[in-house]
Length: 205
Image (cartoon, rainbow, N blue to C red; front, side, top):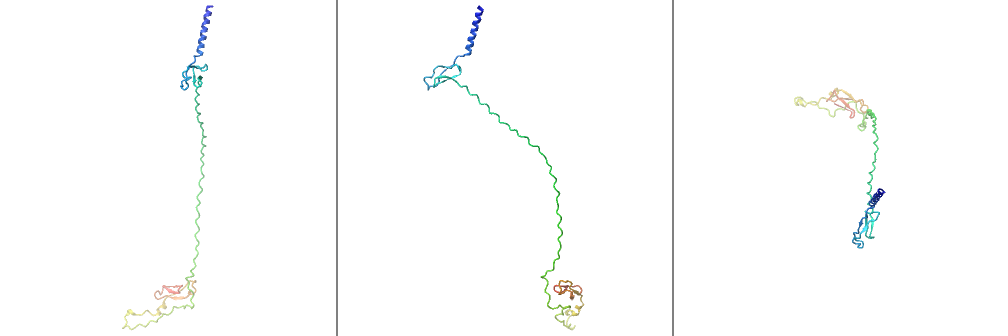
């Protein structure tokens, strides 16, 4: 029986000690605001709901539990990463070969059109018929003077009979009907080499 009584005493002491540790002593707090002189430095004790963490409401002069500090805001979530789609594969298209250059055909040679003789240069036909023989000289040469009075260097030109020994030439251009086919005697300057100018209808060297 003695042992049982000792055991019960020890058990009671343990329960009291546990109760003392489970209910801590309330904290004594005071109002420190001098504006509230009725409550200033008045001893107050924290309530049982917050025996160690309380503050004094000086306006009401009562201890109140201090609100726990708000938890820190969670960090902002990282911005979503937009994954860009991979670029499409490059397709290399081979361009077709260029068409062969078409060289233009050379232009045909211009047709040569014979230029008609100018009508402005054709003189009007003479009103009188042109004699076939050259006109006689304007003046008859005087007979040579005696050899005693005139030096040999002053002899007159040869007589007109020498002109008749020249070659005969004709105008062969049908565009000049007034002179075409008419014979002309070459002048004395070129008795064997002359031609007929159909425009003026006269022999020229």
